[in-house]
Length: 298
Image (tube, rainbow, N blue to C red; front, side, top):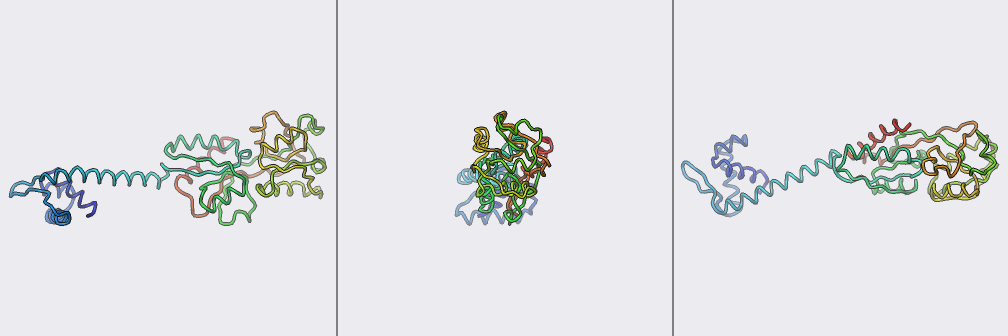
C-alpha cells in the first residue's frame, strides 16, 4: 500500500463519484478504478458499494476513511517539518563560542537570528579554541565563533572573519604603566604577562609572539589561565599585565584599564568557523545574520 492509494481512496470517498475524483486527481477514470480495486485486493475487504449510477462507502470503508485521512495528514506534517529543517526554519543549532572575543558580536547576532528564525533553537557552548575545533570535526558543533586560528589548525574547516578587534594592554589601575597613553613594545616585553592557556588557546600565543617579535625578547609569562575572567582577575590583582582585545571592556568594565600599544599591532580577526561541506541551511543563515550584526557593531 502506497500513499497514492490512500489519496485516490479519499478523493473517491469524498466525491462519491469516480469520474469527478479522476478529474480532481488529474488521472484517467479507468486508472483510478484499477487503483481502488488494487487497494481493496491488498487489504482484503470491500471499501465501496457500487451500482450502475453510484458508489458509496461500506461501513468498513467509512472507518478506513478516517484512518486514511489521519495517515495522509501525518505524512504531510512529516514533510512540512523536514522541509522546515532543510530550509533552516526549524531545528537546533549547536554553536561554540569564546566569551571574551565575541562579547560584542554574539548577543546582537543571536537577537537578529532569533527574530528571523524563531523556531530554530541555538544552543551555546562556552569552549576553548581546541574544544571548538574538535567539536566541529566530530560534528557535535555546527558553528564556532572565535578568534581566527592559525592556518594549520583550520585543516578541513572554513573560517570567515567578520569583525576586527584592536589589541590593547590590560593593566591594573594602580600599575605604573596606567598613566601612559600608549605603551611601547619594549616596556611590555619587560613586564610579567598574564596569559591564556597555550593548550586551550594556541591562537592567543601566536598573537603574543607575533606582537613581541620586534623586541627580540622572550615573553615573561607569570601566569596562565583557562578563561578571560581568570586573566582579568589576575591583572586586577597586580600579578602582571595582559595583551587583550578592546572587547575586554565589555566583560571587565572598569576593573582594569586598557591602553594603546605603540606601534599598534594588527587587530585580531573574529569570525565563524565550520566543517567544510557541513553548513546546514540554519547555520548558513546564522553566518549571514552574524556578518550583518558585525557591521552594525563596529
